[in-house]
Length: 198
Ligand SMILES: CC(C)(COP(=O)(O)OP(=O)(O)OC[C@H]1O[C@@H](n2cnc3c(N)ncnc32)[C@H](O)[C@@H]1OP(=O)(O)O)[C@@H](O)C(=O)NCCC(=O)NCCS
Image 1 (cartoon, protein in one colour):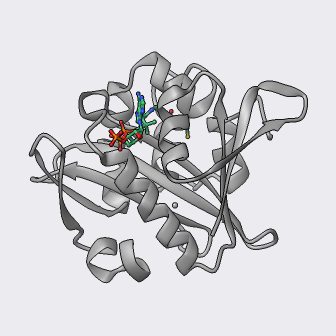
Image 2: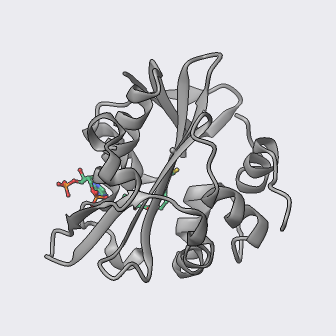
Image 3: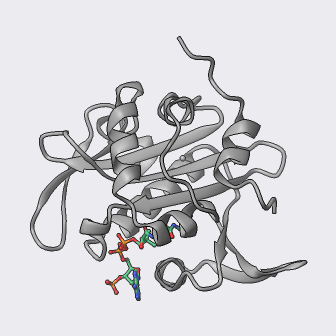
């Protein structure tokens, strides 16, 4: 069994240049079997918590992302999601992380993934999210962000935040819709910090 990278390794792998994971009360059906979710065009999907056996599907999902999407998500180029990182992402410690996926109805492919990392000191949660390019504009991003908000509240967080590239219009529009507040990042004009009081 591969060793799990510590949180810091995960972060540095996904965002090395800068430092700057329930609807309802972490509903049981979402965290285990999942619940049906219908895309805006009618495609039947499932929204559920991420699972240890999602590693291969998560890596396939990453490989379908466009280079631009990858850059928006991790702030740099990355050709593939390394297996140890994918394994780490799929084996979440619920004390530290909540992570959700939207899959095809047969469970075969992951169409979107989103997570929050809980910081017990600041009582805030850092979010990250990505949607399959073939499912953009289908409401998956909004549904998953709402899931993250509920999971963060259930974990006792008082805020949620994330850093987003200034040119990331879709994410800025999505977070505007959720009433996140934008602020500049000191010394990094290319990045906006988005925060939401919970
Ligand atoms: C940002 C991202 C998650 C949005 O996901 P999505 O599933 O397409 O978003 P949704 O379909 O749920 O859209 C929800 C709302 O967001 C806003 N929105 C999303 N994309 C938009 C766009 N391109 N232009 C304008 N508004 C947009 C709209 O208000 C939309 O609601 P509406 O269609 O009813 O107006 C997706 O584009 C993505 O995966 N990007 C790459 C990764 C990334 O940037 N992650 C963020 C950094 S962690």
